[in-house]
Image (cartoon, rainbow, N blue to C red):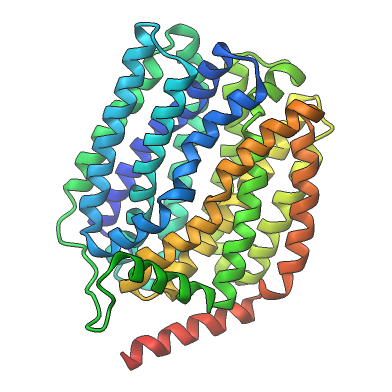
Length: 411
């Protein structure tokens, strides 16, 4: 069954912008590492990029439920294009600084909170058959990871070696192209409010918080995701220094290391829908949570880039399988009029810890060595996955899905 023209426009926009992102997220830490060798200062760039998820995610989710979600997406991409173009010009003129990276990174993160909330809430409206959501999410995950982690990183490393500003110009252009594609999707995508829905922004946010807090499965997934992202961010925030100082990689080698995440991510994205149909969501949630923990522990003592690449590939597969299952669940279980708000609370818990993790990663690495964030993160996540395991079952998922279907029939 075809997923439709509207989905394919969203798919094309996601692919283009993620190619630019893949180039950007390799070029940015390399530029930072060229300005300073301080692990905390380099990690602070990741903090700036992710901090808006802690500060603005809830507000963005409430506003996305008020506004046309397609319009939010294309406007956010225009803003991001302008911000990256400013950075490109500064790098070209050699006027960039760590302070500029922090400010522009923070601004980009604010725009991302609006774009990502709108994107995940828009997708169910583009798919006629809800059973096709895992397939659609799987395709988006494959495209995102091929572009973001497979093609983008080595290209970004190569472009930085040739001309430092070029990766940022390409990223700015990719945002503009993606914005045009999203704007071309026909239709209006503003959620229909309930008659008894609260009118004040604070009350709307509170309604989303209460809904998620009362849902055992999604609440558990959100809290576990928060820990996974916090400690994964702690490790990834100093990966550029780990790659250069311990693995002995240059700029291009660091870019190629990033492609190993994509190899696993592509495999995970391609197989996630089929594995979901064959084994059910429970085993896939177990695989994702435990594998992410174990790969951090495997990487910690290694100095061989090939072995680290294999571990990153396995981690990439686990992350994508987890994402496909959990994103599809949220899109199925959460009522449409609450999807932006509840999704933003989920992302607040799940992503809000990333800037904290990035800062913790820099501090731990500065005090105990570049391998320390991998050791600490792996142990913490292994304990957390064990505690959450009784809830991560197919029976729990099926019960939540059935309750959501019954709610729709009643309404």
